[in-house]
Image (tube, rainbow over all chains, first blue to last red; front, side):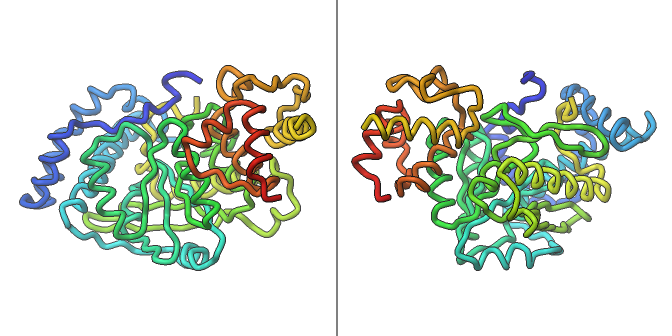
Length: 294
Length: 85
């Protein structure tokens, strides 16, 4: 696997920057913060040139936009990504957002059952925001996170998510696999990214936006081996202070007669189909800043 | 114990879909991960499931798990001492 294809697993920013941001959000109006961010975005696009190019190629080749449209789309994509990050810090600072819930019965009906389930997340929209509104009193949710996230981000997420019975598990070394295994044996929920190869180079091929892409085997293997229900979760920014959280059920009764390999392929294809649907509605909220289709 | 080791190797080959391997290719004392069979995190979860489904052993302690998954010998010894199935 090439270095470019693999996500480094790091969250940008230093510890003091994250602390200062949270303090700012307690006192500054959101409109002012967004305004400053709008000014900074072009510089970030210049500095993070490979990320800019990846989004430009995505808009040109996968969304069929012209050069100027794609360039402007890159700006708005970066702006929306920044706004999503700002909203996250605003939440840490105690601010509230309106969240419209779509398909939440999928989540609630599975959350009351004895068996656990897999919830697939993606780098599309602001998945973390949905974590702040998904309350699971009967069933703990375990969210797998990339290692090397900054301590402030982790401690704030821990604090915010713990109240909703959500535990963060850092995918570092091998220890987390035992925690994950115990969680699934105990009938808990596991939330895991399904759009980035990390920790294993094994992949499944799917078609997303008309081109072949590789997604990690891990989440689909977990579900197929254990015959667990699978959902895909998204939280899309729909306005200045509003989001729409969406849940899709991916497994179907048809899978009962399938082999493990067939189940994995079926789930991966269903996931790709849902990603297509979400990206057709919110094309600018695609936040995989690397050449995803290479 | 030898029968258990053979059974374990067959189950590992089946669970991890190691189609080019036979039990004879897996040494009893060779490391299972990395330089041994070259297994990764996905395979580790499959081995944990194999232990639970076939031998009724739930793997949840990382320190213990690392010792158990050290080699086929270590796995077989642990299974014979702790199996409930």
